Image (cartoon, rainbow, N blue to C red):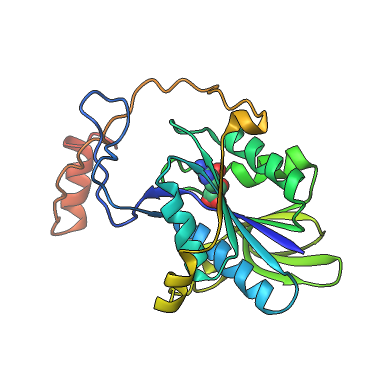
Length: 249
Ligand code: AMP
């Protein structure tokens, strides 16, 4: 069984994101980029499933600029087998990404597709759900545990009320939560080995998939600067401030 893992190259989570002066987006030039954090959990989970003997190949898929190859290489250095880059010159919306993942899934026929629960740059949390709908496969989102049985899988999901367990049939799509596992670091020998692992480069046109944007972004702006807080000495002072300064009571 093959496992397809979708990984996105995003601005590193430690970077203070800056909005461009013209409001057309955020600065990405000379900014540290990394693999979207929950996608690392997806790669780690795929490796664990393969190591348990339940899968025999892990394919890493990324959609983005040429440099997304670096993100694919990171996953290959962790232990994945080969990569596919779908090269694009502009950001692709979740629907376009989902259509491309679904197309690759039709060609490669994996039993499992793993994604991150959410990309930290667009915060969409849409792709896994749309891939599942496009392929008509079952889905388990926000997975914090994945247990493969024979032809089905038990997925534990983190929900507001606690933990929900669902059983779905293979093939399935899962989006991975940060609590799913602890992603491994790539060892030096594995980083060297990853340099020789194949990455197939395609375009949406090669695949016959329409990824033209359907959303018009009007403007990106910094959130308003938060006002400095004050410490009040007692409840009476708090009530006075709420009444006369904040005018909320
Ligand atoms: P989103 O729906 O945009 O929050 O993204 C959810 C997940 O979809 C991510 O964690 C990735 O696993 C996958 N994904 C989104 N965009 C891409 C992309 N450009 N390339 C590969 N995977 C992606």
